[in-house]
Length: 254
Image (cartoon, rainbow, N blue to C red):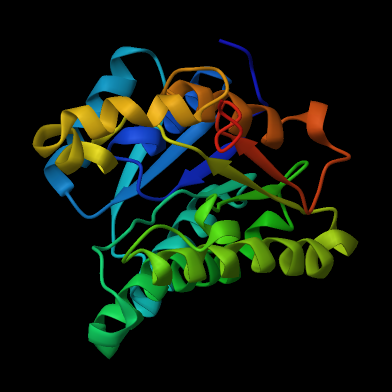
């Protein structure tokens, strides 16, 4: 395991899927990884798994859509370690599907909170500690839906992710003077529990998705984790305000 000079990474939504693979990869890179989630049992289990691999990790249970919880916990983490070197705003999700005509204000606000508010709350709270970090950076998650506005019923998800794309560039502009970089990854169809429902109810539809991907296969969480690992590293020290599509050429399939 390489020594990253006691670097600290905070990863939201890290008890499963892509988030956990990112935590594991950054841990292997030598970071102390702080996992966030809302399932405390799962969080404890993940820390156990990482410890078994010799990775230094901790779990903080809080809801990324709740301003006070985010601020309080990120501040606790920052104070404990004296700095944050990488913030990975991994938490987010579809939140369900709804067409605009039937969409409740509650649903609209929930999806926006899950994807956009969470990124804002965590980033704002982390900035004072990122200023004390080494080659510090923020990684956000957008989506192809941020460009194409998503499929039927996913319009507000697409809208929230377009917001994440814009806030990534806005934060990059805001924080450049402190040497803090801000980039985003845009995962394509990654084989995780995010797609569990369609995988179990319509396996043939799920299987057909790879036909729209140039490389002819679905992505794995590790494919995203390796790009995040690069973006937070010294190798990417001159990269900021960028969004990297991690989708195997999705949308360009033949």
